[in-house]
Structures are given as structure tokens and as C-alpha cells.
Picture 1 (cartoon, rainbow, N blue to C red):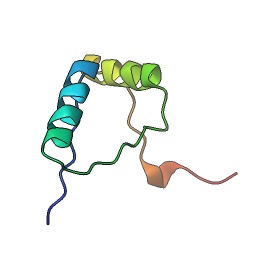
Picture 2: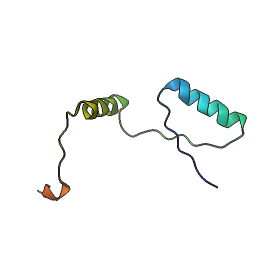
Picture 3: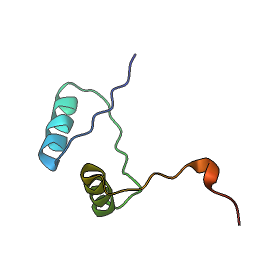
Length: 63
């Protein structure tokens, strides 16, 4: 069977998805992001504005 990963954009969508899964007796897992939601929002906002710098991983050297 396939697995489905959904990304609700707000609490209302999350609650609706959980309610539908429970009504259909579909098991689901809850996992939390290890990142602070405010930090994630700040990074996404910076990406939208183009306010970021790309770093080539081969240019990084160990100290």
C-alpha cells in the first residue's frame, strides 16, 4: 500500500485531515519538525524576497 504525506498550512486544515482519517479508520502518525516554526517562517520569507546566499558545499573546509 502507498503512504501519503500531507502538509497542512494551518491548524484548521490539520484538524480536518485528522478528522477525515479517523472517520475512515485510517491510521496516521504525527511527527513534529525539529525546527522552531518562527525560524522556518523567517527562512521561507527570506527565500520569497530573494534575500539569501547560496554556498557551494565544496567551498567549505574543515577547521
